Image 1 (cartoon, rainbow, N blue to C red):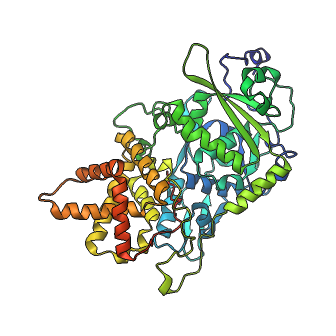
Image 2: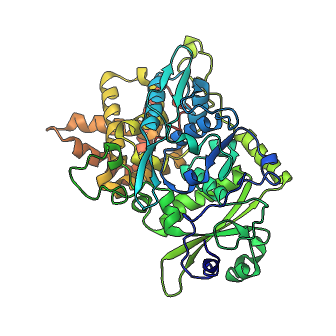
Image 3: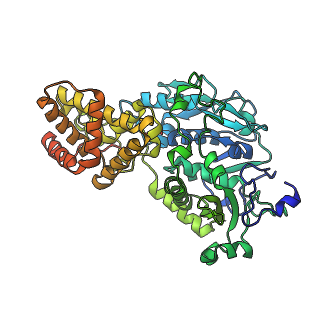
Length: 513
């Protein structure tokens, strides 16, 4: 950026700050302030890969990708066709899925295959977008050795290996506990624009810079809190776009009915579609990202949205960062230690205890909210998520044939409500209602059992056959308007089955969003 352009980076002048030139430096993370305090393996990416790509990966796939990237030896790995191995145990820890669960292998294969087929979008110099895959085809799942063998896409290799400048490196441990895929992306985007303690004499908005008196005057209510921080101004729309898949127009697809675009993209909504207002963007993206970054990483993060005078739309986001001290990092370490999940692979229990909480602590993770990403899943994957939340296999044998069929239908109706892209508002309302039930009752088991009882009674009284659409409406109405009564019916059913809750297993992170 030219020096005379630097003068424009003041107050309310419009400046390209997200996709601008990137400074060459050997480490984007300051080793004096951060790396010596970090722990675990490191992920390394080129800054171009971080700053000039548009993608939104489901949480589980994002974590698997981070784990694979952490296995690259930046000094020794020179062969782009090298195979990297992920063990079943590592997969279990990443996803929270018990390796002893009957559906474990199928879920593992579906998840890895989904990541293998997942594309992201690179901005070309002329403004067009080029599709590129993260992984090469041909992943091998070995059920005997319990390993997954994966290769990176050759075209991606220069962006993740043998990097000597213009890259960002950060601890994978910071990210693996995060529940929001947006938190992971916001963290790496922030780091890619930071020079640590280096001072190159630039003052043009390209990197984080020390907070000045001029900046403090802009935000007088935050004066005391922002001292010692660095700041960078992002254009709000550009930051949103980095956390999103591109629009059909950006991908060159337009609204052509006969487009040859893969079907999976037709289900993916942009961030503007998912969260059209700043309020929604702040609630679902920025606030969770700030919370998780402040709790789980080496950074303190604050942000302030800014309007242009005379307008109502927030045009800019000022981000403020400060590295944590050694004492503060000890608290981060303690947080990770105290919140570490259980090992996903456990020895098989004797048959007499098979129906109990095999490999899991009662109540662990099943009470976490369903992720927003479930709205973009296929209904089949969403159904797997719901099955895991109610731990269907733990009480399946206690139900008669008709009850099993009804319960299976209810899960299908509910998953189709959640993944119906044509009725996005209804899907989001359903998700909020389910999460309220989880919050109030600890999980979804009683609601599902209550719905099974209601459907059984309704079907017995029916005089004519109804359509699947009719029953989806019934599920929706009961979910929104009558959940308390449904939960009470489920409680009676649970007591009838065995007099106690029998459905607590830690598979709450089936998050193929």
